[in-house]
Image 1: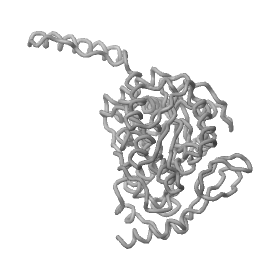
Image 2: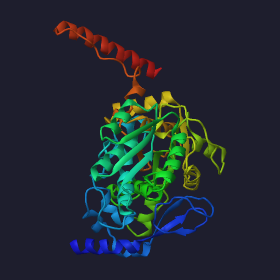
Image 3: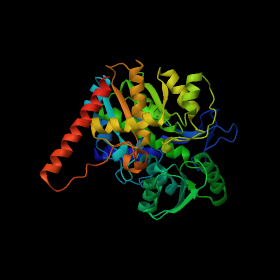
Image 4: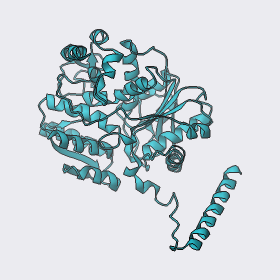
Length: 434
């Protein structure tokens, strides 16, 4: 097995071929660039699947590290000098109580709320982006972020010894601000929404020549999301699910899970089948859901206004591709309001013991909405993606989850409080039944 892995290492340079425009097909060198010079379409990494098919197997993957780097041959790195901080191989939880509540028989939760090192799926994309940044010679890395990406970039840059400057909207949740500052990056809080932050970062990238993970390094960065598809297939016993439900921000995660399933099928690691793709957005920032519902092939940008700040991207770069995937797989894209998002967070917590942030609350609320509309077959193997931890967005729940029962250090005080609590529970159940 050791020799097989050594052969994989040698083959990797022949697996990576070029950057290819998703619109016109023009190809470019594997450098720090993300936009086609001919049509301004987005670039993505092109692989040699013939070489991959001959050199990778279930056995070589299973013999790899317990992280995203077990799939190294499918990721855009050219050397063994990748950054492994234990990212990936997060739990795929078979749901029982939530599944019963919703009336589903085969529901799984992919829980990236416990991902390493910063408790969100962004650790995957940043591990890949910074590994490639280091190969390309960058010493300063950066990003435009709604919070989670800034946390990941700051943490993994610290581990790798790279200088780091990250940009966020100035109104982010305190947990996400602290979650970046602890790693001592230069943190720029910009007065504006994410789209304004992103435009500024494009100017900075051109001026300073830094490696921005979601701008000039975006083709490499986005490939890290494929590992959420790879892991689910492996954790299901090398089978694809029937239906997935995932949050939509830029749309990149959605498209890369799809690409991951396609790649595993292409090289023979799993048997191919059509997987339905459904996406979740917050009503206060739902340009992709609106385009899907209206049958449009373009995205109309919006100004975000929602508690789900981590997915509040008003002008999503991959929105059109997300719509296309949902359409061709017979999936759906739905949106839910802020109240439903909070209920989604509470529902997942009280049924499965998983505390998710507002993006996860959005996804669970949309899952519930799709089930109630008859758009998910109860017998489908359905995987719902939880991409971030609730400890980062505690402010969103203030005033919605009750208060502790304050008592004296006496038995009779406890008994009175317990009876009050049980009475309130009975009243709440009566309201639910009505």
